[in-house]
Length: 251
Image (cartoon, rainbow, N blue to C red; front, side, top):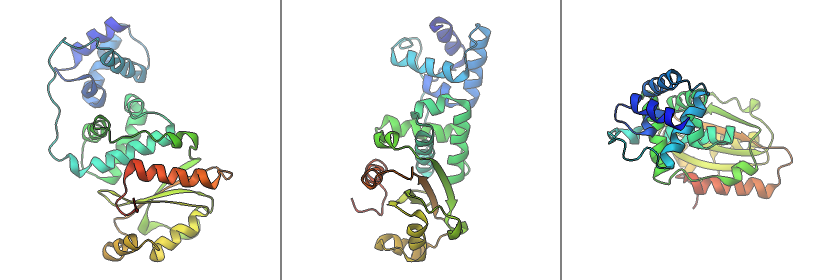
């Protein structure tokens, strides 16, 4: 399979890198077509993952020079790419690479990132997430795999109906269109989030809400198993604060 993959990659890559071929929808379609022409009938996710594994093994080094991939305005959507990647990592219990290699999951990633920072291409969102990983800013959240959520729900804060929020335990994240603002945990998510939206007991978050209102505020709720120990819930909150660095939590 490896020789066919190498040939397909070289025929499709247009002098771009393996990462670019996986992340770029147009180049990826070309790569998959070249694979099929060589009798490789594995699922697309397997072909993409195998290509990245060849790169990691050094099998493709020295075969050609890669054209760089850069976007000047990445700071405008980098946060959205991180939130989308983290969401799918936690929901699917997969690495970012595995998410981006799978066309179905990558499409969900694009939709999620686009809902947070509209107006950019799939390649831009995906490339921003990869750049975060390469810069070691996409730190593994190991506890998230020990205590996976039962469900992850997104809301616009201005559209939240408090009476419909879950009363179970979990963690929650509040963010605007550019950054993660606050991470918290609660035994009763409805009561805790209602307190934030009425008048947060976190002074900095209350000030942000007073100055900006709820229009740009987004809410992510991660519902945990009912019998999750309190110490696990609090440890998960601490891990999210460490790995995602929200601006309004006390460090």
